[in-house]
Length: 345
Picture 1 (cartoon, rainbow, N blue to C red):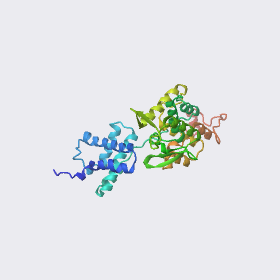
Picture 2: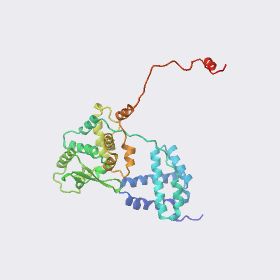
Picture 3: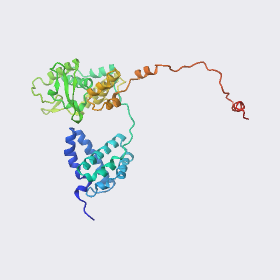
């Protein structure tokens, strides 16, 4: 049997794809991990399900039918959610796009796999906290202590600025500009996109109180804005810790606010604020800019939902349901009588 050339092996470019290409196009460790996870699942399908060695599996073997069967296996055998299946398939397509760009002879393989359809995922309306009193109770839940001061600031900044948790933990002190005419955050967003978000007067007060408690003797402007101290060493707070803080205070107020969604997480603050702004009449274009969406359609798809009260007001406009006194029935209930009327017997 003729030995396969290394460049023909399907996984021959994955290392460069993950370690060189992805870091150059996506400044996020989470993005690299997503692609790595997707390709790893496919690798296990090739070796464990199809029983093909990595030393034998070539680009030519990665056909439309092969990938379609892989997609269906994820759904029907592994029972992945449709969105997860699409995510895995997207990672595979991105890798093949990269491989075909490096080697033009692989373009036919890439075009074939590009035709493997994604699964249709039903559009879901994610929960928001739309009760003003409930949101106020949540933001006020932390105690009047040093840690409570930090937690109040974290909860409030997540809501007020619509910042993502990942963006929040990557802020440094120098990115928090409160000693200027119009205070703002300089945010390093997804896909290396940078944006500024203005801070409200109340938010500035909370940030000043937090900085006074946690940075009084720290002149280092490159210090992480949100941090934890472990064994005497300051470290950037993890996203999981932000999630824990949000969940902690949601559970504290839950008994008094039964309308609170079953699961509360940082992104819900962003969604609640964005949806609330839309319902209050803020132009969708302005909301998209504040949220850092490159495509306004993203804002429309995920945040532009009217409230039930607004839907009710719409339904009450114009001519509504009118119930009048019933007139004599045009047709009798008896089939024989109907037949007679119709000239039948």
